[in-house]
Image 1 (cartoon, rainbow, N blue to C red):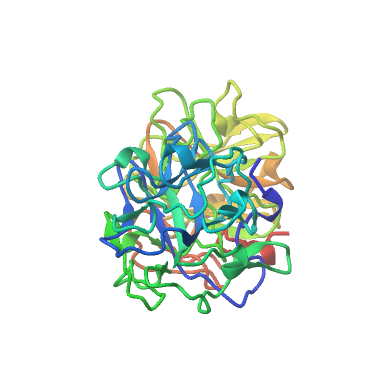
Image 2: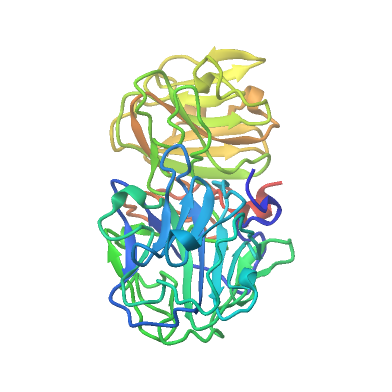
Length: 467
């Protein structure tokens, strides 16, 4: 259960005055992607505020210690498991949060506000998540007027512990990164609650940043690390390019794959990379599975995937209101009222009246070569599903019945045996898109245009069509 689940930001569900256009996808370990403020001048080491939005795609059990920020060995802000820890100036002043942040579908807004001139110790370090107090479970407060190891002249790192340390990097998405020098601010400076009770970003143009403050919007593809505060305190990127920019943001949140669902042969998120859009089963066992993070009961939806390896793939949907059967003894494509396309056999496989049913061999074209692009068109209004290959509808099985998955809450599903696939729900994908087609609302970026009346799986579309 995610902390503050009732108002966790899964994206704007109405038109807001302020829109976030871009986020930055980061990948730990093999990606080693991070950014940093190089050789800053000393700021106010007693009073400062950090604010940013993150969407997590890596959790405890795969890599338990994910760093958000670091400025020298005694200044760290990171996840320990799924709880937040803030080190003011060494182990003796490390504050640990009492809650856990474990929602793979949500954008979290985190504010860390420090002012050691405060007479009350609990006022010297304040942390907030989604606009609400995020309490600490220990009492290692800094002493009054203490100077921190933050806001000094060491490089200030984001998404890693320090340069070259790939073991503690974070994986996910960053947006609206703000550093304020000389003020201890509250969440109201960075966000607000919309008409639906959801915490959302706001325009930051009224903030006084201080000389060492900066603001990263990631909205300039020719200068991704540009400071939008007016201070020109730009950041330097490591292994980050324009290919890492995403339109999955706190004001329009897109579906990704869910690293928290562990199937019979799953790897508990270990096989998901690149913003939880690349899935590779490496268990050496049976079929490994993956769910999407967004479930639908109505509407028409489209997503794509690119086969980077070609042996065995089972794309489709799975009903999640049948109970938690992902740990069952059978393979995941045979559970939860699934409907999937067996690519290697070129046939449909589905649960019908509780019985696993196979279509005829070679019901659709043979398109399981590496590099082929598969499109899924899901019509929950009529309980039908269709498959495309490289933009061509497989007409012989178009608008197939969902059988047992009909009239249920379903999520995108993918099963594979020791193969990799790259997903694109419209917000981010790991492969290069040449045509940049969007749905009729202008959302998502796809290789092929969604069929008429079908939309990207994102929160703005869900609010309009999701039932």
